[in-house]
Every structure is written in C-alpha cells, then in structure tokens.
View (cartoon, rainbow, N blue to C red):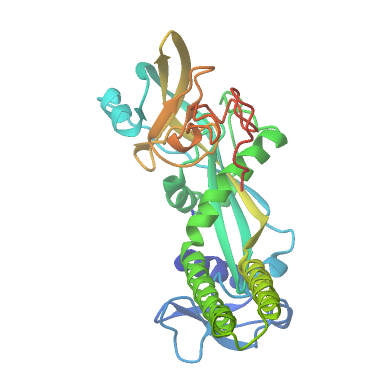
Length: 380
C-alpha cells in the first residue's frame, strides 16, 4: 500500500516536533515551522520556512513528496531510531450473528469448497513493514510502501493498514507493551520465511505504485524509437535509391546498408538500456500491532484432499481479512487450491507452463515446471 501525502505530512509534523521544532498547520495542506540548528542541518532546511504536501502549495513553501529527495533527508534525520515499535490495541470483539455470510463475502475458491468449523476470540500479531524504494531509469522516482502481514494466518491485508496505524497511534505510552502471559500469540516468523514474503509481496505493489512513471517512460521510449527509426529508414532508402538508379557502386552501397542496419540495432540497444528500470528497496520501519480478533476455523476440500486453516475478522475494520496467496502474497479474495498440498494461491500463481501448457502451483514449484522442467518466469 503506497503512502498518501497526508500520511507524509503527519509523519513530517511528528518528526519536526520531536526534534524540537515549532510547527503550525497552514492551508492548503502545508506546515509552517521554526527549526533548531541541528534539525536545519539534518533536513537541509532554513530556521524559518514553509513546507507543502498537496498539489497546491502555500505561498513560499517547499514541496515535500515521495518523488523528491525528502525521503532521503528524512531517513538521515531518523538514523536508526524508530526502526522497530510495538503497540497493543485493546478493543471489544463483538459477537457475529452470521459468520458464514461474512466468510462467503470474503473468500472465493474457484476450484474447491470450504466449510466453517467454528469461531473464537483470539489474539494476533500484525507486522506493518514500511519500505523505501527508488526507481531509476532516464528519471528517478522515490516512494514509500507499506506491507501488512498477519503472523497467524499469513494474510497480507493492505486495506487494514490505515485503520491499524491510526488506532496504534492513539495507544497511550504506558499501555504500549503490557500483555498478559495468558494471551496466546503466534511466534515471530523465521527470517528466511519473512524474506520470501517481502521479496514476492513487494514486487507487484511497487510496480502498481510506479504505473504512471512506467507509462511515461514507455511513451518516451516509443517516441525516441520512432525518431530513430525515421532517421535510419531515410538513410536506408537513400542507399536503395542509389542502387536502383545505378549512380553508385552496388557493393559499396550494400556495405553502407549493412552498416546502417548495424548502427540502428546498436542505437536501439542503447535506448533500451537507457530506459531500463532498476528498483532499489530498503526497509525503513516495522510496527508490531497486537490485538484481539474473531478467528474463523475453516475446512478446505479439493477432490479427495482436505486442509484446515483460519482467517481473522478484524473488529477495527469490521471485515474478514483476505485469504493469503501462499506464493505471491498479493491481495484479493479469489483463490485457487492446488491438488498437491492444497495451497491457496492467486490465479496468476496457478497458470499454465510456457513450455508444455500444463497448469501448476507456483507455491509447490517456484523454480520450474514439475512436468517438463521448464524454468518459471523469474520473480521481480
């Protein structure tokens, strides 16, 4: 989930105030500040100034956005502080009169059936991980992205992030870490398992947030390719006309045609390299949110196979979380169930092999097709 300008404004406000600055809201969507000397140096700002976060800026304000170098400035100002935080949210979990209907609206299995086994009140951990990414092509773009993970179910509920963060920010300081020993919480995930979620879950989300940037880059590439083609096509026609009219030696003009073609291919390759996009990703912060949920125990049936799993209904959002895609960790309610171990995967993670056309589960075989051995499409 990409962060909005209002979230950025709130973050900058809290950082400035924490560092001793005097901050006041101004319209439209801006801040006026008086900053102490150490903060001026860290953020490269004057003692007095204005910052703007919306499409329209206050008079005399400097724009702060994810596309500017402000992401780097804020990172340097924070250093290693605030990398990890924890909030315990205590909220009522109301009884639900029709849990079957809730599940039917939140889970769609294309090739399997499910049955509700029971519901209970439990506690879970959400990890809300914030990442900074930098996309570099002929231009540079910065951005921040959040990925939420329920450590109990493996769900990645993007739509829960804002409500969870808002509720977490309201937790009083003295109540942030207190937990009863009787509360059963899921264990933190092993690093290798968590890294797999991050690697597979971030790629599509980053590309979605970069869609306008990518579209503009594609238009510029097409424009430059068209200009390049027109130029070398004109040179080619000149040589061909000389050959037809007999005004030049055929062998010489043929060598010139070959040189034009080779140079054109080299220029096309240069353009493709120029517009190729590389993306660097760095972790910024992880917030652990611990809270009660309503847990639905389910039985999944596919042919002769059965599997038990659970999904959590969140009382803050008043919705059931989306089922996990156990390969790509992409959002969505539609899932397929594989034949081998009954993985839940998105339709994109159960597509035909590009070589033998046999459908197979990428959670079972991420590297190659289990039938013909053809390599799978590389992950982002």
